[in-house]
Image (cartoon, rainbow, N blue to C red; front, side, top):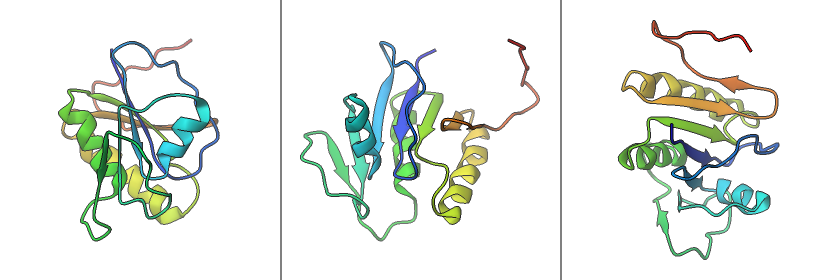
Length: 138
C-alpha cells in the first residue's frame, strides 16, 4: 500500500520508515526542515511558515496565519486529494501539549472518513482502531 508521509513542525527524533516508489512526502511548515535533515526531497511543502523561514522551494503553498485549520490538517487534505488513505506523520508528538492533543484529535476525525493516520516517533505509534482492527503478533 502506498503511503503519504507528512513531516509536521513538532519535536522530531528521526525517521523510522522506508520510502518506496509511489509514496508521497509533504512538509508541513517547519517539518520541511526535518525532511532536508534526513536527506529526502518533499513533493510539496505547505504552511504559514510562522515557525520556520519560508523555503525557497518551487512547489509550496503558503497559507495565511489566520486560518481555521492547522498546517498539518491542510497537509493531510493534500495527501487525501492525491489519493492516499494511509498517512504517517512525524513531528506531531511532543512539544506543546495543546498541539499534541489537537494532532491526536485529528486521527479520529479522519478515521471516520476512512483515512488511516498514524502519528509516529522513535518510541510511539498512535493510531485509531475500529471494529475492523486485527492485531497481528510478530
